[in-house]
Structures are given as structure tokens and as C-alpha cells.
Image 1 (tube, rainbow, N blue to C red):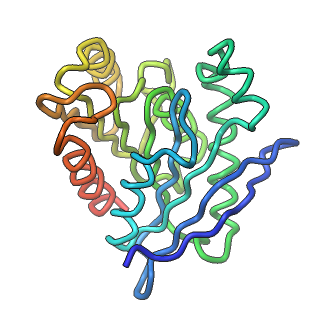
Image 2 (image 1 turned 30 degrees about the horizontal axis):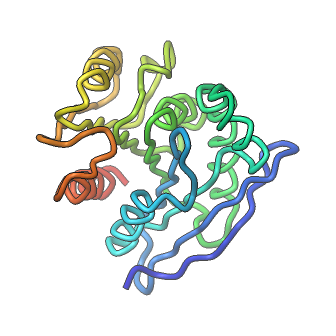
Length: 217
């Protein structure tokens, strides 16, 4: 079983964010993974929901959350600028992190971040704001370079996963890896493109992510 899921709302300042909190069925919950979606994605992303389901089967709770409101998503669809507002996205991730720390089902659990695209840059920045609770980060096809100077301050073990055919993003991830001072690794999935839509590619992402979170959370 992959546990039960509930729609939740998270206050981030004056903004209310929509999310889906998933709790594993039975046994001990080993940690919680907060998903930082990338450009044009949401809590309904089939790829991230698939990853979240696998993590819950491994005993991890999950929180899939929209870092932009519906109105902001409409603006971003026209301008494309909010998805690159890393400070804004990171602040909202921090708010979601604090919410998890107060929620009865997740209070006291170590938190992992799973970031995709620009969400990965925001996750790395947010991790520097809550180093005492963020225990691991996984980036899928992410833009860790967007974290800028925050990279050197990240304390959480970080796994960067990139598709073998996603050449520009491989370069960006290698440059970011060189700036990380925490335990970090770059995994390149052969034959995969940016969205890991090729047969077996997403399965490999899931395996790598689950292993990383299980080891560090």
C-alpha cells in the first residue's frame, strides 16, 4: 500500500498554498519528502506523484505542494518570470518546511527535498535556511546553479540526477557540484532526456532517489 493522501493548505505569509500530504500506511514513518516542482508543473505532476507513491511504500511521508497560486501560475504562463524567482520559491518552501514541523503527522521527522527544474535551485536555497531539519536533497533534471552563492552553504547531502541527453543541464549540474561543500553526487541516467520520459528512465530516478532518502533520512 502507498498510504493515504489528504488535500492540505499551507500559509506562506499572506499567500495560501495548495498541497497533498501523503502518509504511509502502518508502521513507522521514517521521514518526509517535500516536493519542489519546477516550471510549469504542480502538485498534480504525474511524474512527481509516481515518485511520491514509491517513497510512501518505503515508509516516507510526502508533501506535494504548489509553490505558486493559481493566479500566479497564469501570470507565469505568460511571462515565465515567477518560476525563476528563486528567493520567492525558497521562502515558500521554508514556510512548507515549518508547516511540516508543526503538523501532527510529520512533527519531529527529518525532511528531504525533491526538486525538479527551477524547484531544485529553490530547494537548495531553502535548505540553507533550515539546516537543522533538512537532511537530504534530490534534484531531478534540476537547475542547482540557480541557487548561486547558497550552494557553498548547503549542509544536506545532495544527489543531482540528470538525463544523459540533457547536455546543457549536465554542464550546469557539474558546475554546481563543484561548488557544493556537503556530501554530493551527480548521477547521469543514460539515454534519458530532460523529462525522463524514455522507458525505464523514471524508474531509475525513483530508485536513486529512494536509496538517497532512505540512507540520509
